[in-house]
Image (cartoon, rainbow, N blue to C red; front, top):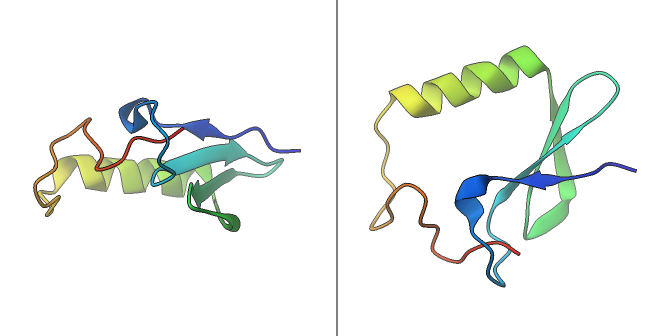
Length: 74
């Protein structure tokens, strides 16, 4: 059974809108908190590249600021 971890930016409320990470025998697993049955399997290198890209590129977060999701995850 996969143990899922939520981002420290997710907070601690009742919402489910966050990304969760898990580990498989061959790589990393990602899922959206409000769609737990939809799982994306990626290599650790691909996940690291995605994180580097997100940190380096400006993107539209609407009115949200880093560390303040619209609804905190449980």
